[in-house]
Structure formats: structure tokens, C-alpha cells
Image (tube, rainbow, N blue to C red; front, side):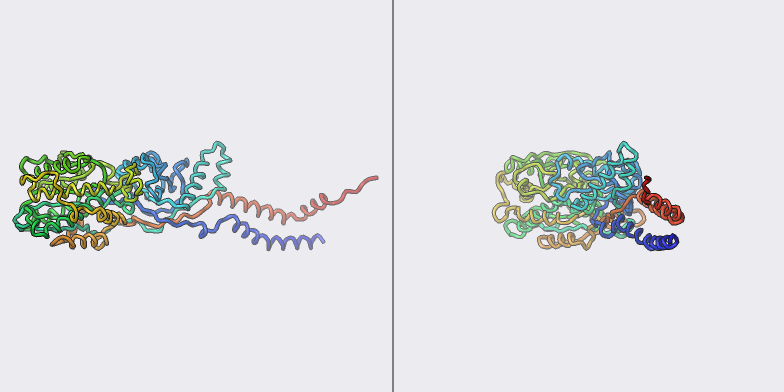
Length: 573
């Protein structure tokens, strides 16, 4: 009987052990496919400019997630929310050799407090000031990503518990997330072309007339190219230039108003955020490699339009104060006249700053023309070229109409259509007074030319700004065949003559700029158990198998012991 029971028990254990082990693993370990969350991430800038490297130099990510509260961040993907972000926390992650950094941004930036947005805008240049070896990504918050962040934060915070046993237990039982990107390592993009566009309106005297050049760069810039929409800088400048092209094309098409003393040359420059590469090459082509051009013959002045979509201030930035009696001085006086008589709510002043060739980049676009001894200005509502609003991913169009109409403070820079229209009208009226010499003719400063059918159209400006901010316009994303470039060219062709493209390609031997790919990727977050859980699980399985092995080998002793324990006791009389 003892031998039969032993054999039956041994067979049961032999067949039930594998099944129980498989069942145990299935119940404990979550299914990988069901636990994955897929979302888009946008990598920090990576580019070289004049031999200097900037931004994140890595793109591959495959590491476990942590928040900055964790004690150990080495080789971990550190997740931060914008509301909790600071430069000190960012540096902590880098100093501890983190494997990557993911910064989570809210879907609607206008919901963020103004001080947080302003702080991040001021930090963006610091993030790009030096190259970063680890990959740095930005992601837009959604419900699943917020849940991942919350669970990771709880797990990371528990590591500071006072009891070692509590830390070990929580570490072994907590769920972690493995963050994995799907793309390859970043590499330099070869033969990238930056496109600029020009078009013209000829005055009544033809080519012999002096030329007024109107310039605006159309690309945007921010810490992440795929999040750089540039509503105010410089979507507003582009919208004004296109509206001026429409208005003056009508003036120059009528016989009564075609007697202007100037040719008008419109230039939409590419690569403006990269030290104005498009403007630099355009000047070289026109001044060094062409026998005759409007730039060579007689330039009255160059007016660059930069960040004009907000504020009740207007600044005319100059590298050299204009001499009295020069066309540049006439422009300055006409601006003062129009502002004083037609828009007394607007505060206008001139800002003088010499060109500093020792700086890595130029301050304003007019300095490119000043280096070539062409009289130039930049008109902006910003007093300083160092304003963080010029280089921020926070510069977006998305602002509620109620806030815009009420004039309340909103998070980050944005475009106020009422002020954009006013600034457009100020520039248009000023140029018209210069072109038709109205002051010398004794025309009062109260006279408005652009009224009724010739008025500046706010709906037109709104459509232009909405279109320009519908997609990011970083220079790395706009090749010569992009829809934005093609649409801008179509618009210029509709109102101007002799519209041309100018392409800039970096020198292959000594490139002034180098762009890199892998700026947008798909990231997967897999729910995983920590490594210590695998060790603990292996220990439990080994102990379980060890106990079963001993029980089978010593079944006789175990059976005898169980019989003695379970045997009924005999009562003694």
C-alpha cells in the first residue's frame, strides 16, 4: 500500500508541476502587447552652425523610466512634466548619466501659468547652449502618458523610504515602464537646400529708380523643431509682408497711383534662425556674382519685419543712426508722423546697436545688409534681440478668442490680430508717404491712404497667420519642395513680378550649417517588472522546486510523520 501511494503521488507531482509553474508565470507576468502605449515624441534640436555643435547628439532610447525624484538616475529615462521642470532638475539628470530625458508638455499651452511658460522660454537657449550626449525628447500629454508618469513617479518616490525592507518589497512588486524608440541613430542630412523667394514691383521710372527692399524670414525656431510654429516670430512678419505685397500691387497697377518714386523688392528669406543663411547667400548672389541687380544699382533702404504680432510698442532697430536728409531718415520721420497722428496709443522709438562680429550669430536680419554697407533697419515690437519670444516652442497661434479680445494675459507669446492689423497699417501708411513724397507735398499726417477698398484686411491677416502656424516651419523641415515654400511662391506670383527662388546648400568641405534627421519618432512604453523581481521570482521557484524534491525523496519519512500526526488517539481507561 505504501509503495502504491508513493507511486501515485510521484506521478501526480511529475505532471502537475510543469502545469502549475506555467500557470504561475502567466498570472504573475503581464502580457507585453497589452501593456504597450505608443505615442509620438519630438527630439531636441541637433545642428552644427559655423563649426559649433548644438543640441542633443543621440536619438536611440531603450531604457527604464524614472522621474527625477528617484535616487539613482544612471542609465534611466528621466520623465519630467513642464509644470515641474527646472534647469537644476535637468542638470541633475545629465550629471547622473541618465540614459535619456523626456519632457511632457500639455496639449493646450494656454492653460499653463504665465510664470511657468516664461521660465521655460528663458531656459530654452540654455538647453541648446551646449551639446548633450543623451537623447532629449518632448511629448504631448495624453491620458495614458499621464498615467505612466504618475505610476513612475510613485515608484521613484518610494525609493526614499526609511526602511530598506520597504524599498526592497516595493521595488520587487511595483510595475515599471521600458521606454523604447522605433527610429535609428541620427545622422547628418546631406545636400539640404534652404529656399528663399524674391519678387518685385517696378515704379514708373523703371530700373533707374531707387529700390526699397522689404524682408521677412519665414522659418521658425525652438528647442524642438517639430514643435516650432513661430506665430509671432516670424509668422507675423511674413503675414505683414504678404499683405503689403497685396496692397502695393494694387497701388502700382493703377495709373493714378503708379507714379511712385521707388521700385519695391520683396524678399522672403530662409534659414533666418540660423544666422540668416538665406539672406547671406542672396546678397552674395546679387552683389558678387551678378553684373546688375536692384541691390547693386540704388538701394534707398532695407526694412526687415520681425515679430510684429503683439504689444503697443514699436522699435526701429538700426546699426547706424540715419543721416538727416537720407531716405533712411525720411523713413524714420514718416514713421514718427504716422504713429503720432494716426495711432497715438502706439509707442515708437529707435534702438541703436552696433554690429558685433565677434558674436556667434547676428542680432537682427538688417545686420546682414549692414555688413555689405546697405542701409537697413529691423522693425519689431521687441526692444531686445535677446527676447526669449524669438526662439521658443511656446510661440503658438492657439489662444482663445475671449482672452485675445479681452486683452488678458495669456501663457506665452501669441498674435493679437487687432495689433497685427494696426502694425501692418502703420508700415503701409509710412511706406506710402515715403514712396509718394507726401510730407514734402504738404500732405497732413492725418491723411489715411489705406481705407475702404484699399484697407488692410484683418481676415486676410488671420488666414495667413492660421496657415503659417498650422504646421511647424523649422528650417530642417522645409526643403525646396515643401508645401509652405510652394504656397509662398504661389502667393508672391499672384501679386508680384519676376518671382525667383534662391537656394542655399552648405559647402561640403567646410559647411556653415549641418542639419540632422530623426527629429520625430514613435516611442513605446512597455509595462515591465524590475530586474529584482526576476531574481525574487527565480528564488521563489527554486525554493518551491527544492521543497517538492525533498518531499519526493523523503516521502517515506513524510508519510510516516503524517500518519502519526493524523492517527486517532486511543483513550486509556
